[in-house]
Structures are given as structure tokens and as C-alpha cells.
Image (spheres, rainbow, N blue to C red):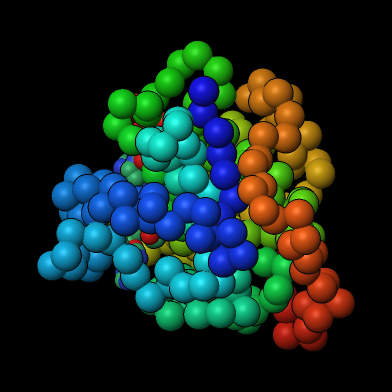
Length: 223
Ligand code: COA
Ligand code: U4Y
């Protein structure tokens, strides 16, 4: 049985034993398989400058085995979009406590392309909407390869481009904004046959909701 766990600095100590495996899995997938050589490190672990205390991880676990994952970074901190790919954003930079940047979605090869049920990648995407709704996020920015876009359409994610697609490492890549709202959740749940909330929040009962009042900056120009 697959469980999707929320891991943040407040409960990370409960998962410390998994994090070495998680970073080795990322190395296998992103460096060895996808050949994203910018992420190569001599220690065989894929860890970048955005794996900080502020990162939130969703890990899909089967017992102690990691079968999938995703990372979310607050846009109030440096992000892939702000630091590595600012050329993908034609709008004012987004720095809001209620908007996170998603990255590093992965599913282990044996669990990809599942036909029965929604599939693990879709479950992780629904799980991040559930997370966002639970803590008061209103949206996500994502730097992604453009092949995701038809997939988002089919899943009920309405992605709005923040700029033009560009070639990065031989792949057409674009920055998008995806709203995190009840409508997206409802749509996704219906379309993909998701049973309902699925997240495991070990030791996170007192995690505060983000303060949205802090986020209404006049510079914001998301549509
Ligand atoms: N390039 C182009 N299209 C891709 C792709 C890639 N690297 N990876 C997946 N797709 C598209 C294809 O249309 C694919 O269908 P096909 O295999 O018939 O061509 C479809 O997505 C389904 O992919 P699959 O890998 O079977 O399914 P999944 O939905 O279970 O998992 C991922 C999708 C991306 C989570 C999984 O492929 C993965 O973990 N990949 C490695 C990590 C990664 O590249 N993550 C995305 C960037 S962070
Ligand atoms: C980094 C330098 O796929 N370069 C970096 C760093 C991939 C390119 O980014 C480079 C990553 C999916 C990497 C490669 O050339 C989102 C998604 N995002 C990519 C990611 O890394 O997760 C980033 C951009 S494209 O070498 N690169 N990191 N320094 N630190 C997405 C997420 C959630 C989902 C759906 C899809 O819901």
C-alpha cells in the first residue's frame, strides 16, 4: 500500500533515515537516467541549493521503500525560476508566502505508466494540491518541460505561461503558474478517480497556515 507523506523541517527527524536513499534515488533518476549533468556530484547524491530547511517534500512510500516524490520551495526564498532560469519569466518575479515552486517530481521506473487507477505521478500532483489547500497556498510556479502541458490539461490543471518556452538541455522548457484552489482539486479528483485526501502528516498537527495578508504585494502580476 502506497502512502504519501508530507515532510517538512518540523518532522524531518522522523524520516532522516530515508533522506540518503532519497538523494541517491534522485541521482539515479536525474543524473544517470535523465543525464541532467548540471546536477552531477561526486558523492552520488543529487542535492541542490534548493534542498534547504524551507523545502517541503512529498514522499510516496511503500513501507520503507521510496516509490515517488516531489519537492516544493517557497517563492519567498531563491527558486529555480528566480536563480537559474529567470529568462523564462517575463513578468514581475513572484515572491509570495502563499505561492511555492514545484520541482523534482519522480516515480521509480517500476511504478511508471500505471494504467490501473490514477497512477502515482497523478497521485503526487493531487497530493500537492491537497497540501496547498491544507496550509493556505494559492498557487504554484513550475519550470517544466513543455510535454507536461497536455498532461496538465487532461488532469484538470490550468497552467498559465509566465513566459516563452526556451531550449534547456535539449528540451523545450517553460515556466508556468498553476492555481491551487478547490476547483482544481474537485476537477482532478473527478477526472482521475482520486478517492479523496491522502496525505500523511506525521507530527505536523501544529503546522501554521501561511499568512496570505503578507502576500498581497503591489508588484504581483499573475494575470
Ligand atoms: N520526455 C517526454 N515525455 C515524457 C518524459 C520525458 N522525459 N517522461 C514522461 N513523458 C510523457 C510521455 O508522454 C509518457 O508516455 P510514453 O512513455 O508513452 O511516451 C508519459 O509522460 C507517461 O510517462 P511515464 O514515465 O510512463 O509515466 P508516469 O506518469 O508514471 O511518470 C514521471 C511520469 C515524469 C514522474 C516519470 O517518468 C519519472 O519519474 N521520470 C523521471 C523524472 C523526471 O523526468 N521528472 C520530471 C522532471 S522533474
Ligand atoms: C539546479 C542548475 O521538471 N540547473 C538545474 C538545477 C530541467 C533542467 O533544469 C536543470 C534543475 C516538473 C536540469 C535540467 O537541465 C518540474 C520539472 N522541473 C525541473 C526540476 O529540476 O525539477 C527543472 C527545470 S527543467 O539540469 N536544473 N535543477 N541548478 N539546481 C513538475 C513538477 C511538479 C509536477 C509536474 C511537473 O506537478
